Figure 1 (cartoon, rainbow, N blue to C red):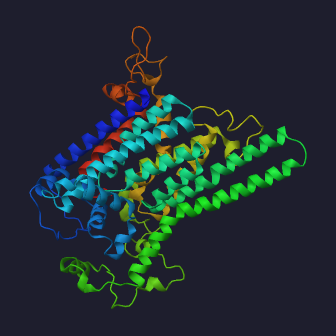
Figure 2 (figure 1 turned 90 degrees about the vertical axis):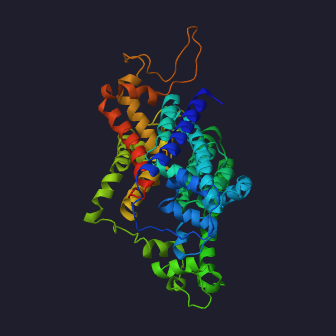
Figure 3 (figure 1 turned 60 degrees about the vertical axis):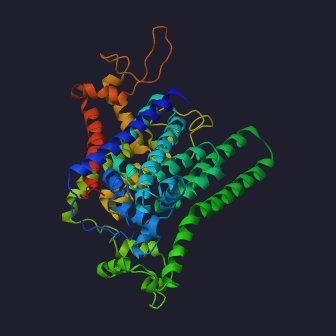
Length: 507
């Protein structure tokens, strides 16, 4: 383990512990808001330690976390539960049944699931930060930028969603890990990671774009090199072989990544369009909730829902349309202006990243980053830092997420949507800090204690000092850019815990 990885892991562990502590304090100090949210009745008798666990970790179970916990405990009962993909509930149930089984005499399944959320998401977040750091070192080719990006990720504005019973930490770990494997050339392993990510969140399908782009880039590079070093007709056969191999890899990889999504939609279709369950088998309390709230449950004695008759009967699309009213420009309403303001900082980072990158690499962007002007240019000797040609595909991916999230989703979801799916918000933030903060410039700083690494008297390197922590005592004298970025990260870090854990609007 390198010094940088150790420093990142230590900071990530501290932020996880602090998040769990603060959510417990804030949840106890502030009364829960009576929100119109999914709150299923408890059908299991509480045991000895349930009240204590609920008091300590109850803030992790609000808003969408209630869906994941309900699915982990009861399975997919209500139609709108199918908006939440199965991998995270399966992991929670596995932890509760196996790792936490010795506590079954003192904790009900609900209590063990809450403990599983705290332990599982903490471990998954540590994995995600290691994966992000490895990916950043490989793509950016800049140690300082990779380290600072990873440390910023530890105080992500989406922190509460990485801590609570949401699938963001799981998805981030799988996505960043899959991207690292793909960059290293391990295509099949990357496809497996992306496939598992798709079992956690539907936007895992977007990762197919990386699978189509990066191997294509490698194939073009191979053809260019072979063209300049080989003569004769053998080049034609080599070109055909490279193209066929690329097509097969793309088709097989796409099928692997999309398989969990398709299988889950088929499971939803079988559950509601050809049900084998009668209402008598559903607990009365849960059936009563369905009747009061208008939730659909599978019933073999009732006609199938209308969406089953569509040419492409996708339950996920039906849920987004009917239950959440998600669609193109549907969220553009005057009463949603506060939510647009909440999403504005993350959107600003996305726009700044795309604009700055295009300004620095206009020709590369117009060529879609697929080839350089010469054999030795482009990806063979990349420029270290944020403007590295290898960053191009990540900028495109981030921009696609930003545009889609703004136009077609609940815009307040944009913060966690991008923070768990793309490294770009952290790369551009770290780039701006290193570019504009004199205290991070070794040659310009008047405060030598603010360093990315310290040295002993004999010149040996020690564990890198955390620049985020080192900047805090000098916050008032930092540049406006630093104050804006750190202010945004820390304020959302605390605000999210305060509001979300008390059923206040932070989703």
